[in-house]
Length: 304
Image 1 (tube, rainbow, N blue to C red):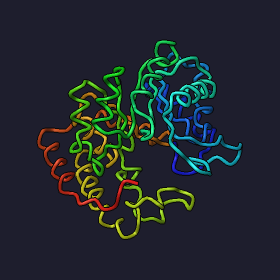
Image 2: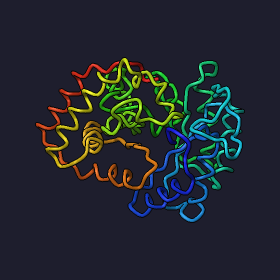
Image 3: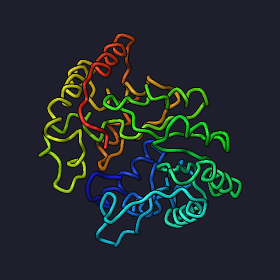
């Protein structure tokens, strides 16, 4: 998923390089590019399916993209559907676009308040029995959602936003519930939608069609305040000989051992940079200082 219109060749180069360096936990969703993202992955998966742990998501209803017009999410109205019939239909459509006969980890992207989660997970469990899905996950859910779903079928992963500027899962019960039940946390936007890289210094650094321009935390009235945390991380990163992005990722890695990070990128150089975060060593004192920075940060603006 990108923040503006993607370049297919560039994206394919990044995917192939990811395989070369051992970055093989791939996350997609049917809504990304209105199906285009999954089709793009298929072009690489056809020769490397056994090398990739493939994750995708369902739950948003949408119209498929028209070639040449797809963007991050495409255009038109988006709804949410977790009904059994839709789950099966969405899974079959993703399998076809991905060009594979199984999905390693299949998430419910958003919870459907009109459908009991037990009904949704029951259908996912059927897909597991049929061999079309290996593991079941939830995304952007509550502790209650997790517990109810887990009673029907083991939930293997919960995907949630988690970064130095979005650490809400530490206090809303999601992280503790995952720890209690032995569920892997998959952190999306671990760099705060690119904010923690330090490369975005003003709203003008974003393309005109970049959806982050509408995000509350990127609004002019919040921007300067939110830069304070980034600058503090950047200052500490220099002492470690790493980038602000690498420090942010390294900090997350020590917060929860049973966690996977999803720092998306469109460029090989940033893929290498992000992957290198695992080599950043933090002392107990470093971790304590970073925790203080995160806890004292007064991040302004809602996440969406």
